[in-house]
Length: 77
Image (tube, rainbow, N blue to C red):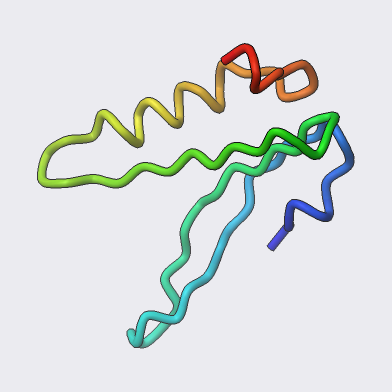
């Protein structure tokens, strides 16, 4: 897995996060990591599916496609 500390300021990457949840193999989650030019402010975007409500994951996916992480200023979002 690529970690946030592996990214240089202004870089972004997709990675996989593995979690042992007691199944025959680890659960693998796709994660989008973006490191801004400065260390703060910091944001964490998460989303999950409840029933047939896919709006949260869709909003996060749309955000990751739309942002140029090299110029994102979290104070302006």
